[in-house]
Length: 140
Image 1: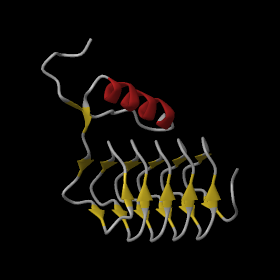
Image 2: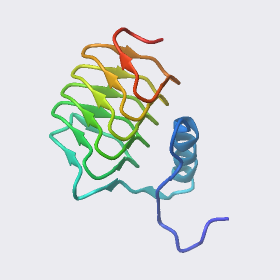
Image 3: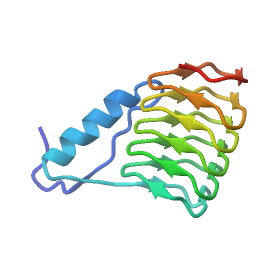
């Protein structure tokens, strides 16, 4: 049950549960609550094209110019998202992961800790890229 005094919310469901995070946020918005962005003072969102609602940006996370980030996404500690990337709704880029330029990541996908996604690739929806992986081709 929601507290009657609540006006805002943040959904703290991590890991590969982007769909649950996104749907929970949507239900709370339907109730009239306002999503909060949680952006560390030590994270950097550099001139984004689109910045969705309810995002969480941890210390050392960087998203470079002309990138789009969907609703309810998590950029975890020390991850990098290079220029002109497209992150769908509910995406989680785990700590230390590196996403090269012009990468597209579908809704509810997770990029594991210290994984690397090479430039101009497409990662589909509901994909889990394992920790330490090096992605060299598109993943459906």
